[in-house]
Length: 286
Length: 184
Image (cartoon, rainbow over all chains, first blue to last red; front, side, top):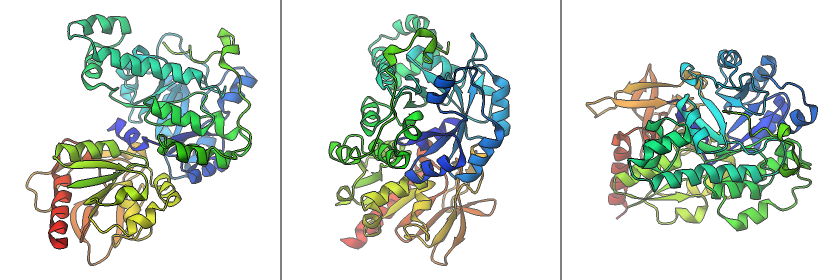
């Protein structure tokens, strides 16, 4: 049931928004859901300091402004923030590395909530640990707020490549592999048998253009999160629509050429390789 | 028999898998020419605002209005087909009427003509606010119609594609066979 909503989001784009006005632009552009947060990752990166759950007032305004599902972020391991978001009746809670972690060892035990969770992952073991904790949706992390797609690609290749590898193993080898992955054996076996994660798998972190969205979809993502890429660009409305179209028609290069035309300035971006270790968000999560 | 599944966005893969399980050829539809020659079309659950916008961009709305074969809409697909959107079934659907995600639920549904209840999966589900006289209500929950048929159009506010129960899809395929009989 909890993963059912995520099935409805497949093939779609989920957009970060910081106010009701942006949420309406996102919905009109065809977003399947919006992520309500006070600062997009690019601004969190610029401002520094501690990034926390958003003000409930701002989440309520966005819920009142749109009919699509509204997601909101809590800090990793911050189960009190998660409880508050559930009381607000958000449609999904993102236990997110974009916010400053509240626990350096434990994630939220997500089985106890009626609201489904989405969690980030950089590789298969991390994805399966989150699913073991009750996540109903996975997004590969990428490196949020950079506009650089390279980490999203690395993480998708790690997750989907890891699944293909599991499928090649003999049944007795899966036990040792579960140990290597530090993931529950039952889920490891399910993935080996079915060739996919048991929950919907989106991509995130650094997607800035229609071509980026198509690349991720062709690599096997079920859909796309776009954070700073839309509202940090020159023409958010036009770019939002183009990325939605590119996600649906990801395999049609003629349509992609059309929707990539004349979008104005993309977000400026930071090369992911230029980040110092302490600036990397992808390493948050255990 | 070849059935199309509108694949702009949403739970289209589950419908394709269900149809293939029933021995039917199922194809994904993203552009109008892909409707040619199909014996029926499924419009899946998803986000109706996103789906309607993507349909409008490439003329799929008009193409589906002109599509002569049976149609089956689930959840968002039911919204898309109603009187206020594509106008292909004489009822009005209220979106998210059962509430937000926390109000999603599972409930057994008594379907007309079936002895065993059907496992209904309701996700931010819509309900039928008004139905014209030509619409047959096949199942209700708390007085709200959740499965309805008018002629060649079948709509459900729940998600049979997310279950292992094939009966609602079989019902749709039966409508497809009836229509094929009429047209030949």
